[in-house]
Image 1 (tube, rainbow, N blue to C red):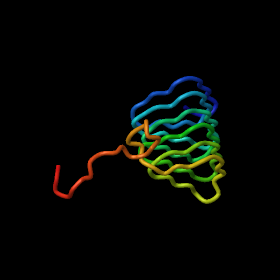
Image 2: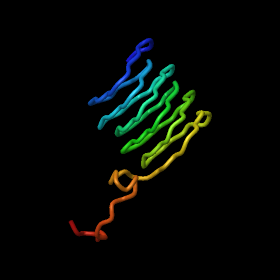
Image 3: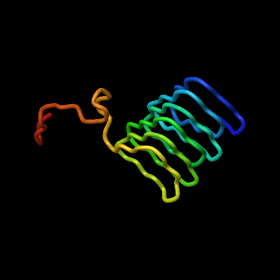
Length: 121
């Protein structure tokens, strides 16, 4: 979605998607979302990877693998991922939870199970 575009609704995608325009709604994918400079995103985001290279993002961001925030990003959101990188100089307001998202019912905590032993399947 290039600069000057505006979209409101649900975005479901495969592969990599980059947003440089305005988006409002819900974003879901098993792949990577890139938010570019100048973008305005107000969304519930649930993807594998999020890379925010600029622009403004508001909402909740859940990533199964990682979230990366780079200057000159402005992020006012709740972040939840096992790996989170915030570049020096990023404007971030919100809360941040670094935890795996194995079981969505546990809010990012690992699901209980039998202890694993080395060498057992």
